[in-house]
Length: 90
Ligand SMILES: [Zn+2]
Image (tube, rainbow, N blue to C red):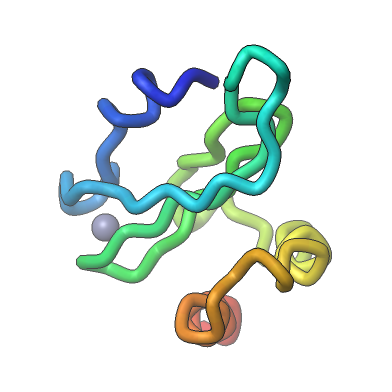
């Protein structure tokens, strides 16, 4: 996933801009792992193996995403991590 492509993505729910946190890039600067966060609705969208996961809520599996977020904990600022937990508790 290229940065220029990610720039064009917006939140599918409210069309707000997404904030990107890059976790891993390849040698060509493609984003392999990262987290997109919507400041408006506080949803997050993980990028896994270069693919942003932007499924509707009902198709999201928090239990599947949780271990990944724990691996990424060191990359998350505390504030964002709290938001993720709030989302996971819903
Ligand atoms: Zn949103």
